[in-house]
Image (cartoon, rainbow, N blue to C red; front, side, top):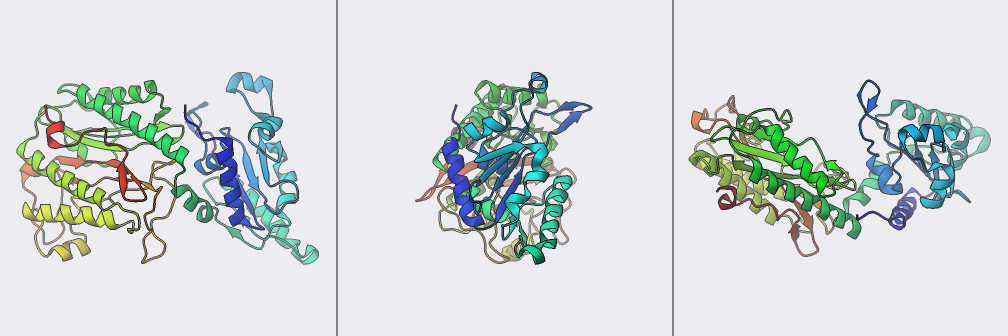
Length: 440
């Protein structure tokens, strides 16, 4: 099992503390998510918290205080409790996190309000992301307000709160060699599952049976499960971007769109393939599939270090629009169609996203209103153009009605791409996608 070492976590903290300077950064663990009544989902740590600590327990707070004379990395955790551990599992406890996770100091989580001020009072700023945990947001704000109120007497206090996302997420964008190995493992398992699903899918089977094969493969190959709810969409369901009901029976002449990825050690794969259930595209399906595949291949070629992030999206859009115009499904001036987004009834999403600890991974896409992020070696992203011709599609004003023979066709093709120093690498190339490979 590949894993992020505590040495790498420490290096990440050191790098972040250089950015924090005389401030103090605070990170809260993820809460438990309730499935129903008193039953919880399998616990999944907050990605930022995990990135910096490798610690996978709830009810924890990490504090980075580089200005403190003795304690630069502090953890507040659940204390050891043998009775509770019998029911809910082993805890590292206060001494354990100091020994294994390298905390300079650790306290029971119930001592947070008492101990936290000593790491804030001499800081010039507090770095904290005001997230969904409103109660904890209030805890941080109340500490800050008390320190500000004491500023006239003490002559020091954190004078501002800054969002940790702006200093941490750019770090997360560039993947380390170990992170890349974990992503490679996640994408390899994802590819194996897609290939198994394509062999298994036949007319008469149900979408949920295909889903079961995919997710069975994730687990049996060493993944921790799906990176997101698996999309197994046949027929007109393929026109629903986030279709997850997966309860319909596969019919003759259906396309089957599968968007599924494996999570391996918290790092994720994300693949989409679309293929004919009966082994042969209809003429209309084949035309649309070839158009989407052409857009994807050209978009992937546009993924190069030094290029702006939006370049591959713009490339895919132009190919798709040109193709739809050739088919008479869009009419007019191509530049106007693209600028005014008249293609949106057919293609309504962006062509990709960052990939890593989160499926839609941390990191900005734009530097400011006008400038896009520049691709660099170590970035990992998806390239996933599509065409979705809903049975109820409504073209924008001035565009032609869509003939019935095209309606109900939904196609998306998605691969995971690593930006390299000289170009790019398709991490999911083990999953076929040519017309010949999609048919049998």
